Structures are given as C-alpha cells and as structure tokens.
Picture 1 (cartoon, rainbow, N blue to C red):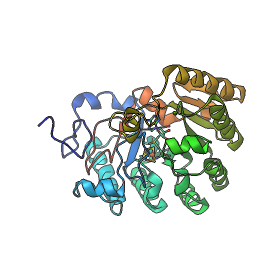
Picture 2 (cartoon, helix red, strand yellow):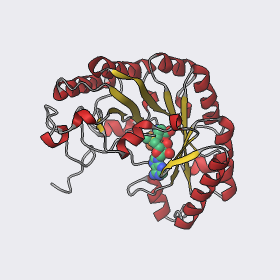
Picture 3 (cartoon, rainbow, N blue to C red):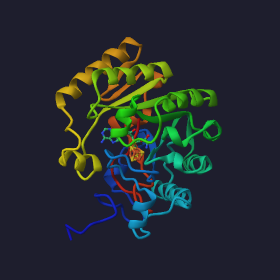
Length: 318
Ligand SMILES: C[S@@+](CC[C@H](N)C(=O)[O-])C[C@H]1O[C@@H](n2cnc3c(N)ncnc32)[C@H](O)[C@@H]1O
Ligand code: SF4
C-alpha cells in the first residue's frame, strides 16, 4: 500500500465526523482561534511549486476525487459548519481568517466572501479580526478587489516573486513585471489596510542586481508587509527535473545567505522591521497575525486541505 500513488497529500485525514482528540480541546478557551481556508486550484503550475493545488488538467487526472471549482465554496462552507458542530458551544470569536492556495482568486470574489461569511455566521469574528486572502497578480482587477473589501477582507497577499522578466520566466510565472506593484495600488484604492508582496530569491540566473531591483520595486509599490523566501527546489517539481537534466543550475546556499542579508539591509533601511524568519512589516499592525498565531501554537481549523474533509496539517499564511 505504501507505494500506491495517491491524488491526495500525505497525512492523516480526520475522522468523518471531524472529532478532535481530547488533548486538542484541553485549554482551548485560553488560545486564540483562526481559520485557514484552502483553495486548491491554479491556472497553471509554477515549476517550483509543490503546494496542494491542481490545474484543470491535474484535476481531471484525479478522476473526480476532488471537488470542482464550481461547487468548491459550497463544500468549504459545509466544512465550516462541521467545525461548529465539533467545537460545540466554544465561545471564541475567530481572530484571523486566511484564505490561501493555490490561487484563491481563481474563484469568484463572491465565493470567497461566502466562505468568510460562513465563518462569521457560525463562530463570529473578533472586532479587530484579520481577514486575508492570497491572490495572483494576474487574477484580480479593481472590481474584484472592491468586492473582497466590501465582503470583509482587510488584508491581501500578492505573489510577486521578482521584478525581472527573466527570473519570472525561470519560475514559470505568468504575470508581467509591474503588475504586482499595480495590484498594491489597486488594493489600496479598494480600501485594503494591509498588503503583502511575496518575493523569492536565489532563482537560477538571478543576480544581486536583479534581487535589489525586485526589492526596490517592492519599496516603490508601498506594501506594509514583505515575505521573502529562498527558492526551495522541491522533489517532484518541474524545476527539480530541469536542474537534474542540467538545463538550469542548482540553487546555491551561499547566494541565498547573501540575498537574505541584502533583503534585510534594504528593507530595514526603508523602515521595515524583520519579525519572523521570512517576514518584514512596517509596523506591529502590519504583521501577519495569522502567521504569528501558528508560531505561538494557537488553534486553527483548516477546511479544504483536501477532498471534502478537513485534514490536520500545516496551513499557509503570510
Ligand atoms: C501559496 S503560494 C502563493 C500564492 C499565489 N498562488 C501566488 O503564487 O501568487 C505562497 C508563496 O509561497 C512561495 N513559494 C511557493 N513555493 C516555493 C518554493 N519552492 N520556494 C520558495 N518559495 C515558494 C511563493 O513566494 C508564493 O507566493
Ligand atoms: S506558486 Fe502560487 S500560482 Fe504557482 S503553482 Fe504554487 S500556488 Fe499556484
């Protein structure tokens, strides 16, 4: 059985009734509660990414095991209701909601708002709840962002990765340079208080100058949060295969270390404070509370980790 290929990720699914062990419930009242809502769809797969996400072609290959995009919001809302049943009369309002992916913004804005409304209806949101969605730069426009803001989202995280076209090409990104920066302006115009840009450093072919150009582009765009990740070559990805075939050079740990120092120098010089391994924010209010909630061992429920059941596993969140 061990070698049997599976369309589902590793890990133990929770039982059908969603029951939690007593140890998970002990002392819960003293811990903040968050929700990570996973949306496992992408238009295309970036060569470096091994996240639990499916393109339309990959989805067909799963033989219908996974919920389709069309009824995904409904499926997820059912899981939020299941969480309510499992947690019974737990009085905690939800402190953070993070919609991650995949590409959540491949769904209609109304779907994301419906999923959030389910959390609000079933649990209630804390007055100052942080409500984030991830978004791909090419998948949103001002009307979409306005609908999210109106529906209760107050933080958005765009996958920028690089400002240089040749780096985006190695990463198989489909957005054009400049689009993530425009997204920040559109998100601000829609009323988003908090905006993050994700960057990746150490991509084969990226120079120090390219990296500095990406950081400068971020500063020019004016987000209040930056996540900068060293490129990880994940087994089984297209990038790993290209490196093995010698088409692309392997990443270099020393280069990664240098780029990390450059990131801290540039971001700190522009008023960002480093507060977690890969994260910088302009103020305490700009930090990703959902991410901090993971680090502090708070409680979170993760509908949509796979199929139609809730999986115990690692959520995303910056
Ligand atoms: C769930 S993903 C992305 C959100 C969105 N789908 C996008 O790509 O714009 C969150 C972030 O993880 C980072 N990431 C994913 N795979 C990575 C890898 N192999 N190495 C480094 N960073 C990675 C990227 O910066 C990405 O924006
Ligand atoms: S990095 Fe984002 S867009 Fe690319 S495959 Fe992964 S989740 Fe999808």
